[in-house]
Length: 315
Image 1 (cartoon, helix red, strand yellow):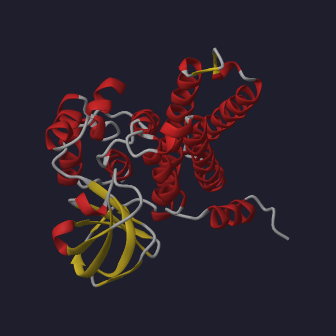
Image 2 (image 1 turned 180 degrees about the vertical axis):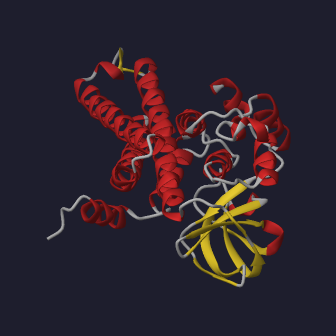
Image 3 (image 1 turned 180 degrees about the horizontal axis):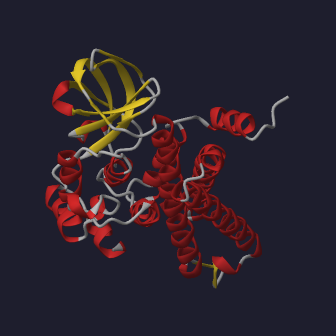
């Protein structure tokens, strides 16, 4: 799968990613064309996509299939579209959206994958709803990260279908998947940097033999290992149906894993020396992804506060 994702990009690759690999339908029930797998399988795919900064809405779409598939009476047409790749999804969970008379009104900004979405999974109060993108006004937002889109989305009495799933659970699952994605990207940064240090020669020796650089890589390796453990603990809480544990682990994982990703990307640039600062090298793309992800669905400070409150650590 990693080799395929490395080459993925464009409409034809999206068709192969959905039709051949079936990644968007991993957690969609089999009767709707999916694989009836679970959140752990979605997380595996998202982590691998993070390694290559996949320029496709896999995270949002596969997670939408998992979330909508949990409903007691799931929307069959939408799930079928997610499974076969004809519907790309995006989550709107941090906007000012209101539900009245079965319609949604309001706006949200910096919606991940919003610029390419056919379907929005929207939080309005405590409820979660599905809305076709044709019923919304979507304006692309320019960000540091050119590998995936963000958008402003406005709803004006948009027709909505109740998702039948907790809105708070959807938001926490989105944080978990961003954490998992960040682990994949941080792992790539570490592996690429170590490989470079083994081959770059100065003073007749590979620079990876220099003790100071070994220490920096060891710190990175420890950070990536702790991030992976945290992310997968959050996945386990989500898959195991433990809402209290998930409420703490989701923001904790998102903050810690993205912070580690940021550190790994920054060190990737520094330890590659002159080549690491060039546009030709991939390092700047990982740094940009890390920074934009840090600001999505809770800044580090906001997530730290959430964890403290939910874990009962505030006075």
